[in-house]
Image (tube, rainbow, N blue to C red):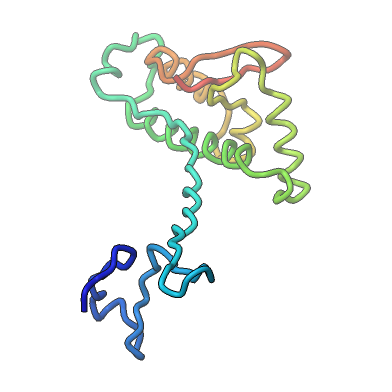
Length: 180
């Protein structure tokens, strides 16, 4: 049988894409609809385009300190701290950052009241200096981690500042730790 211009012969789908009755489970590439003008003519309409998948938002995380970087830190900053002790704190800080920004990226309508209060606090803490940056404050660390915010922790933060993992932005009675 000769093929007309409007009709195209499609290859038969593999057996894995056929239903038990023998019908194809593949989505049609085009739909033929009779126009009603002439019996032999058909109109070809493309299938509606698929919606693009939602983009995942990237949340920046802090990298671990290398042994080489740790040897470059001054002795008065290190004290009795080891590289492993500093690197044990980094994932906890990352956990707090990820938790905070997961809340900030959620739509407001899907949040319960307790999370909405956190969201409002996070928005109030943002300043023009931290706009578009990933930062945390000590209250976030208390909320999302089990770290003790003592003198040892502040010494670790100063080492992280020295290694350019974190920088401080001070203002409005808060110290914001911005990830570099």
